[in-house]
Amino acid sequence: MELWFSECHAPDVKHSLRVNRHLYSGKSEYQQIDIFDTPEFGRVLALDGNVMLTERDEFIYDEMITHIPMSVHKNVKDILVIGAGDGGVVKELTRYDTVERIDLVEMDGQVIEACRTYLPENACKLDDSRVHIYFDNALRFIRRCTDEYDLIIVDSNDPFGPSEGYFTREFYGICYNALHEDGIMVNQQGSPFYKHDAEAMQRSHKRIVNTFPISRVYQAHIPTYAAGYWLFGFASKKYHPIEDFDEEHWKSLHLSTKYYTTKLHIGSFYLPAYLEKMLEEVEA
Amino acid sequence: MELWFSECHAPDVKHSLRVNRHLYSGKSEYQQIDIFDTPEFGRVLALDGNVMLTERDEFIYDEMITHIPMSVHKNVKDILVIGAGDGGVVKELTRYDTVERIDLVEMDGQVIEACRTYLPENACKLDDSRVHIYFDNALRFIRRCTDEYDLIIVDSNDPFGPSEGYFTREFYGICYNALHEDGIMVNQQGSPFYKHDAEAMQRSHKRIVNTFPISRVYQAHIPTYAAGYWLFGFASKKYHPIEDFDEEHWKSLHLSTKYYTTKLHIGSFYLPAYLEKMLEEVEA
Image (cartoon, rainbow over all chains, first blue to last red; front, top):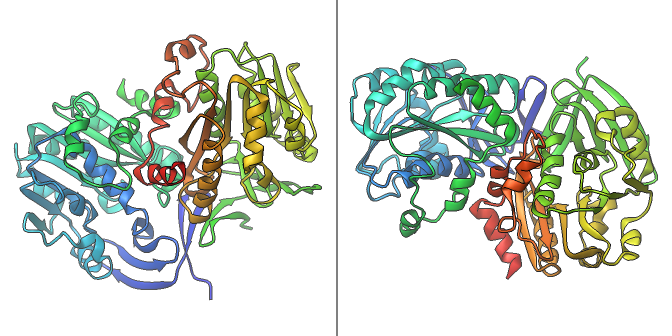
């Protein structure tokens, strides 16, 4: 028997992974949750049929969304993580000794439960004493917060469906208010290659630019995401992602990584000409 | 009717493009040649079932394999291009006024003919008066050359099948001999993500390191190639790809590009930690 999981990265482009076994399938109040075991990518979490993470390439996403802001702001104590129920982002964050509190707001408790059971390597740090999990709507949760966090990581789904509210002007405004005066917000910013994704990325970048004084986009190669090419937004009240980056300080922490390096940190902000043009179009 | 073209990027990973029309199919002495029209990627050239280029993303490959060496060596007059029968690399090279001669060695004349007919935008500069096309085996061709070129671009297929000979120690040695004392060789170096590709990349990098005093690897995001993540090798007798790179000089040429920028030039050499480790393993 041949079992394949296929995802349309664009209406006319399909990415398929051979499947050993369909380990979990559940329908929560918010979405369809599936976990597969695959020969090439290990275990794969899909929400509503879209790959969220695989054991084989999650390190790229998780390292890039955490170490970039954590190496720019040297004294991050209080963090808010939105989405990220799989625990991969939390796992990276708990490696820093400065961190005192990680509030994780995930609306779908069923995702966390499935990941605890089937992706224990990702979820292993959800029980760290600094981690507080809130099953809540992130907009409602953050609206109550003012001047409370050093870092907010928006590790949401794509801006279609249940996570749409995390890409609005209002949402970025309440994130801004919830941050300290030197706070940073990082979000997954989609892919610029296929038209539908590119338009969503431009919309969301425009809203962030209008909210934060510093707003830059950086990139990573993530094989299982659309076009293998993924972006993150770095939005900040004070720190510039390159000018305020202290390479030596981060190296002194001796954190071993599989993707992130201090050089790649800088290179990840050097974008292709076509993408620079797209960003400039909405920055004007 | 639904018509899809599928390519296995790894034994358990498939990348598929919806096809409007199969425009050309021919079997040459060397390989199976197909050209499709697709809604997302425009026309697609496949050799032996592997995507070589698409109209939509060829600019990434062609710009990165040409502008990186052309911006480091400021006075390139004589160039040898191996493979590249589609003409995309030649098209970028003819934009430089310093260039006096481009020798294109392609063993398969049928590829050139098919591209002239079905990919005229790529092939349009094959008739430039500076371009000389040789239908020959590249090893035999270069063996006759000593101290003749400023730049050699090895735009070959993958190191399996008909192009295998372009990834050997002997081949890099005759390229070295064919270059002037400040010459540069750039080659497509595959992808480091899937095991089979990664091993081939390491083998070939080791051989280049043993042949040239300067040898560095750089990267680009190419959606239709394996894992969307592609590498190039920069091998050189004298010039370092970053230390000898004169950003202002290249900008003064006013060449417009869709992918390459002088900043991205630098960033493309800042590699992920896992890839640096793979390269160091064979550099020792």
